[in-house]
Image (cartoon, rainbow, N blue to C red; front, side, top):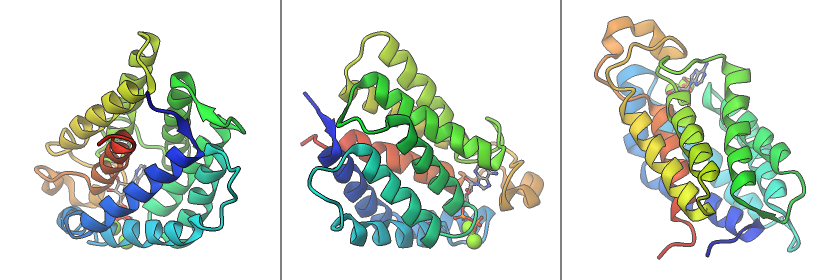
Length: 212
Ligand code: ADP
Ligand code: MG
Ligand code: MG
């Protein structure tokens, strides 16, 4: 079964960078519909910067050290709304896992919960405001329920990714109450929130690491 160590965490981030590069144009298009069209560009720039820093990590690194490197790099390279929000998410996630060498299902749920709470602390969005929180919160809830029911880490990751995907899709009929899309009122209806979509991609990447 899957071991969530530093190597797994690096694998998650590498895969995220790959997926965000591939989905850059699609994320820009979503953001063009209800924002300023740069979300794909912002996320791709940030994760490419992270990639170039991963080589600096020492061999005996921990998941928390990797997450902290991601946080500081995203904060200094992404900009806009998403930079500080994702930066805070990864920083709080790093804090939640501490210096553990390997994350069990409970630690994984703590990581996801801390990330979501960090975004809420920073951005004050509630569920239903048509933001990335609408992907994070269903993912956290589903992950916590799966862990409490005894699921192993790979199962928890899969359930979180599925819930984030459904949550991102469920932003489509909503009116936005935070971020640029909130200026559009009813014109935001029918469009998926780009940040919810990027969250869904990140959590899918986590579920796909270490699988065929
Ligand atoms: P900007 O809007 O500055 O161009 P991005 O396009 O990179 O930044 O990111 C936009 C995304 O940020 C939105 O789709 C939304 O998911 C997220 N977002 C914006 N404001 C908030 C907030 N207050 N709380 C949570 N997420 C937010
Ligand atoms: Mg934007
Ligand atoms: Mg912008």
